[in-house]
Amino acid sequence: MLRQKQKIASLLDEVLHYVLQTEPSKVTIEIEDLAERVQVTVQDVGPKRSAREYRQAERYLNAPRRNELKDYYSGLAGEESCGPCNLHLVGMMVDGGHIEATEMGTRLTVWWKPE
Amino acid sequence: MTASPADATSLALGRELSQRAWLILLTLYMVVMVVFGLFYEPLPSIWSGWQRILKTPGMLVSDYLEIGGLGAAMVNAGLVGLTGLLLAYLNGVLLSGPTIAAVFTMAGFGLFGKNVWSIWPIILGVALFSRVVRRPFKSYILVALFGTALAPLVTQVTYGFGLGVVIGVLAGIAVGFLLPPLAVYMLRLHQGYNIYNVGLTCGFLGIFVTALLEGAGLSTALPFQWSVRYSRVLQLGSLVYVSSMLLAGAVLVRGLGGVRELVGEAGTLPTDFVELYGPGATLLNMGLVGLMGWGYIALVGGTYNGPTVGGVLTMVGFAAFGKHVLNVPPVMLGVYLGSRLLVWEPTQAGPLLAALFATTLAPLSGQFGPLVGLLAGAIHLALVMRTAAWFAGLNLYNNGFAGGLTATLLVSIIGWWSNWRAEHRGEG
Image (cartoon, rainbow over all chains, first blue to last red; front, side, top):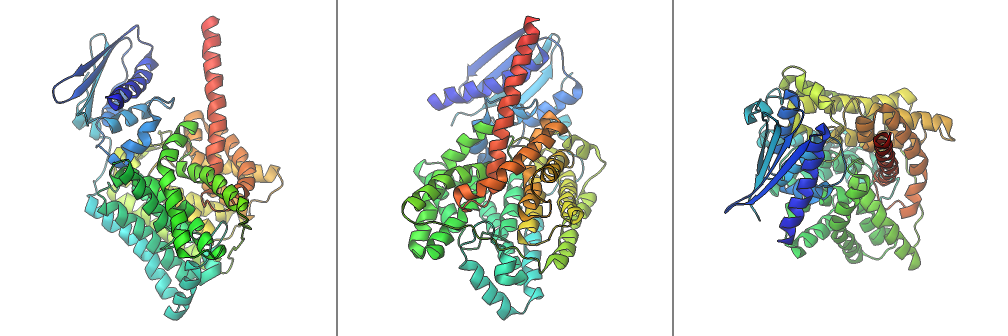
């Protein structure tokens, strides 16, 4: 459970780092412990990103699961780094993710099966 | 606007390569080295040369071309690279950016410091750690492969100190066991801006090992074996070798969209170009970055030998994992200008190797701009000329160690500065 909490905390740190780049006026975080998976949704109200940025973010979030990278490089999660690369780290730690523009801003969702 | 996963992958332009195809391609690049070595010299000469390589301590700088001849050195390098490749493949690790970097780095250092037996105790040590913490070995396999930078400890303890194979192997296993937790921690120091993170880790550990050894009365003198005999043939051979990657990339890539996106990356750890931009763009980048390394040696009038060609191979490997044609040149130029302004010549062994390996700091240039890259290169040079002595040459990734310290220095200052500026603006 401690591992899970740590994972959520460092993952949220990375996601928030990304989300706050656009200086939104409001950010809502939802953490759901569903039967088979943990799902984190971050919804912001603020400026939207470019189509290219959404595309790039989606690609990062859906990078194939890589055990050889996850245990080693996930230590970087929560540390300051460059823009979209943060999501690359997030993508490494989760099973899947989705980012989309909403009427008010952006919604980013990631999910994974607890180990 | 909603981005679908299909849109998301559309940027990875060009043909994909299956894992089997990557295995064949990488195997070919390693086997070519072995075959070249076997044809370059008569077999008895290669055999005797290889025996000398296997029994040499191999600390920095031990050019295997000088010790065993070009044939034996190439055979050793190809086999060391193949070992890394097969180990990754058999453990189910995706053959992608990080693995390519590890394989080419291992092969490169197979020309000066790693041999087919001295790498194994380190790998076994990491495997033992993963067993103890009940994680699959593949979780730490990159640390194991890159961690073979400490292979000279095995050969130095065995042959240099004359303590025998058993003690040498145990020493290797012990340091290998300590590498994974340290490597994860070291990442946080430089926040992924030093691509050779295990170099920093091995150097850090190497300082303690050297202190303990010297405390036990086992002092080590830094060797300096630097071949100049085979420069011409290696210049031509390495040119063909890296150019072939350009060709392979050109065949696989479709349009330059992926390449344009790739060079827009900062390159901080972990940026896997194969996964993000596909094999075509990555191979093109590998060829171009390799040509930059090759061209630098030619431009300054340096020697092509085991360490310098090893440097080019390492650059090529990491061009699949963070280095690219835009973030590499400022750092190399920084080393060049640094050596001009300070007391060294760019053709000397240290500054020449620093220019090739300082590209571990390419993400600084990619993220904060070429001026920071330039500064990083110059600072790195001044530091790396001292650091090998700190761990008595036992860590082959001396530039990874110095690069880690340089990145930590710059990232902490830049981080503090940007925070201070942001706060100041807020107050204003």
